[in-house]
Image (cartoon, rainbow, N blue to C red):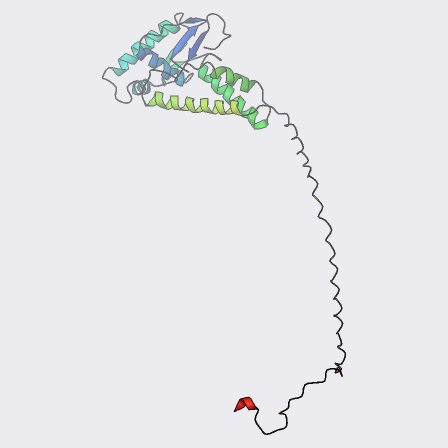
Length: 245
């Protein structure tokens, strides 16, 4: 539900259950099949949709025999609910039914316009109202788009909307500040502790060779005349000494 509409203006929602509001008052859209017809027309807002295309979307290509009659009855019910004054809001042309919605009355249209503007802003780096609008519209999603409606047409449209929702969330996750980041603080200077100085190498004095011990010179031995040298009495004799016999 988008705020700011004047009283009496019709507004439509597909970002959640299919709903319509006149001012702030909800519009009774009737049974589920009638809301499904409205969803098909809103997915092709302001463009004609052939009756057979609506039938195929409602029954996923396998309609009952009275499928066309059911669609026509739903169109009548939507006219009474949405356009009781018969202002040609929902008309039939040679190409099919056309639901003419006013500007800023369909939530998917507003969401996609804001998404496109936000994309352009992020490409240029000039972040402004588009990003703010995306944030506001994301907060208005009421669960799965077109909740309760099944079939190939609704599943495909739901998948596209969910992809666009993921894109919008990614845009909001990107930093929006255009100011340059502050410079990084300088790395702290590492003060190395003083290294201990190695002591100067001790100079080793070579050992002085010791002088050789003086040679002691023995004086010549002189025979003491008081004690003459012993004389072998047998020296120079051929006789054997007595103890040898």
